[in-house]
Amino acid sequence: MATAQETHEYPGELNDVPGWFWPLDQVLFSWFLERQERLDTRGDLLELGAYLGKSAILLGHRLRDGEKLTVCDLFGAQPPDAANRAEAAKSYSSLTRQAFERNYLSFHDTLPTIIQAPSSAVVGEVAPGSCRFVHVDASHLYEHVEGDIGAAKELLGPDGIVVLDDFRSEHTPGVAVAAWEAVLNRGLRPVCLSSQKLYGTWGDPEPVREELIAAFRGRDDIAVTVEQAAGHRLVRTRAKVKRLRPPSLPSSRHPAPVPSPEAGRTDAAPVPEQAPQPRPARPAARTARPSARRDRTRKLALDLLPPLVTRAVRRYLAAQRAKAGGAGRAAGAAQSRP
Image (cartoon, rainbow, N blue to C red; front, side, top):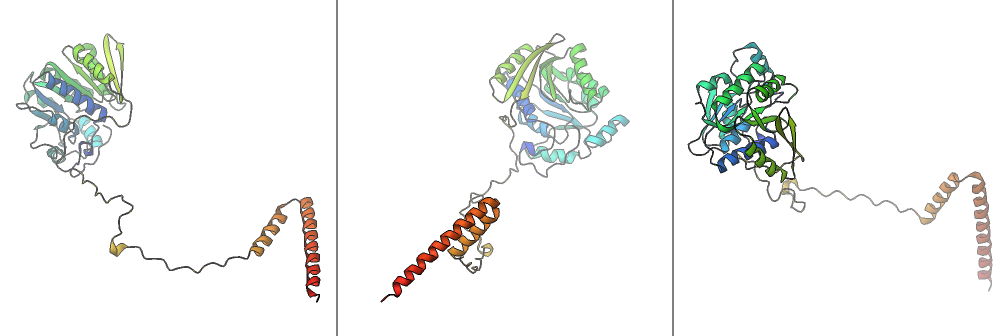
């Protein structure tokens, strides 16, 4: 999340919403949430750091009856500490709660529960163990991320999934330190990694990890590799093509208009007032006489040939003209006889 982006007035589809929620992570979010639905894993959804709502909109698409989505963000409010204020001014200057709500309501009937406060406030607002999926995407400062990971651990139920954003971006070393510290020292077990996010659990990672490997190795648009590091089995996912097969995404209330069938047709009649006017006919160019064209061609050839060849050609042409002239005079004399 390096720089802020401007929001569309009304997004026509999810990817019209500005944000750094890439197609591979859209696929991964959907896969984890669909698996929880299939296994009837109950619980609420939580997002720390919502920006303009792109990932929150997808999370809201996966809510079931009796569940709720909570998002926690400052939404342009002044952060309490100087370091956080500097980061917010640099990266999130266009973030407003109004823009978030406009985007979210373009896809859903009602807003999620909104906590407009620093992410540290979420522990007092969300019940411990009540969540099945937590997306941590708030501050990039180590002290805050470390606290957000602790909050996620407290609020997740057994085998719940936590997603840590920006754990490997060059501009977010604090997130990287906090994420891998949680893996090495705080019991977090990685399930898989994408280019931007670490997906993990404080439960048993093996069942979900094995299912994910089997599911994604059956796709031709996502690469999966597995390696060991510090006693952990790391599953890396990578998009193999520019356009991944998308998951089920929520539909906007403001879809882009479908182009008219006439658009793009080359045989459609022009609008009368814009009909092209016929050009006035241009005078026909004179046709050069064949003999004149031949003379010009000969002259050009003689100018371009080497001198020795030119002299030989000139002698040949002179002889041909003399022969033709002699034949013409003989024919004329024959015709003049009585």
